Length: 464
Image 1 (cartoon, rainbow, N blue to C red):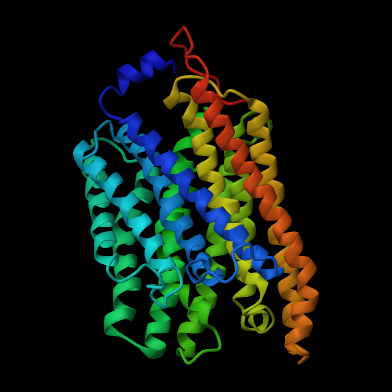
Image 2 (spheres, one colour):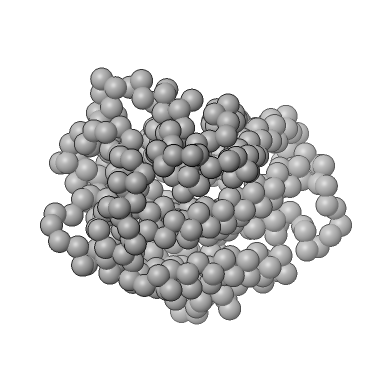
């Protein structure tokens, strides 16, 4: 579709400036998060570049690393993509453009205030929910306003509803409930093992009921556009959606196996986690069936390459989950670096890659010109892909060695000593991933500086 025809069709529906700003802020917070992650990785090999500074201690930077990814990068990236996709799917504008801008400004202040609060030591004792208590009500209001702003055009649309919107609506309903559950119940209403159970649900539901439905929903939107083919099976798309809705909310307790939490809850989490892997298999089969006979597009089309690399990583992550949640496997890998490798594989290898693919596709359309350097697009992809593969493989293997060492009752110091070379390789992999991000930022800068094209023809799709 030409730019002029697309602009006419969607005139007044999409605020492209807002989409661009969301992407810029997402990249800003991703940069900060990756720098914090590198700081942590250097600490593990006794090369902390900022020693003896309490405000910049590794423990605080570690929380900044995870929160900047979840609420700074992923949330901003998804909100930018939603502002592009939902008006096009519904042919309706968002509830109110002023509300969109209010949410944008307020969300950046929330993420920045969270970073300051964490560095000042005002964190809650909840993994992925460390946001200071005085920020939680504002963030809760923000996710509710996001739901109102996007659910309104969906409610106004007429005709059949594409599966993408099913995922979006689920996320808009689930996310406020998940945030309230994780940030208010353990803090004010429950304690002990009950708080641990709720914390486990929050940790996993944040990924499964906020990030996952938005990520897969956007894949159901962008992949058919780029491949110019419909999704292979509508029936499988429904299996994927309802399987996610039924099984994912039940599996958060698998973070706390061998704890005082009742065993029926632990067994239920194990069974539902394994079931989710079967559900994910149907989704991945559906998407790979969609490019059957046209697999070369993964090589020639850079956004599609990002998308399908993330899908492979998603399948591997859930396959890994199906093993690691069993009680037998937990005896080995609990508290080990296996868990760290697993977390990086899903957060960077899946959702970050999907957002990078979306940005690679949309930036030329928003800026109005093709990428300044396709070589830098290749550098971005390969440095990121090789980096996350090396990091995840390195930490997963290390986790097994650590678990076997502890099971053999070897001294703790022994596991620290043999972990050192693995941690050095982790630093190298992290530098590669950060180098890929720098290549992308440089490419954006060069593209913005390039002269605008003389014609209004649609820019190329970032072919490699």
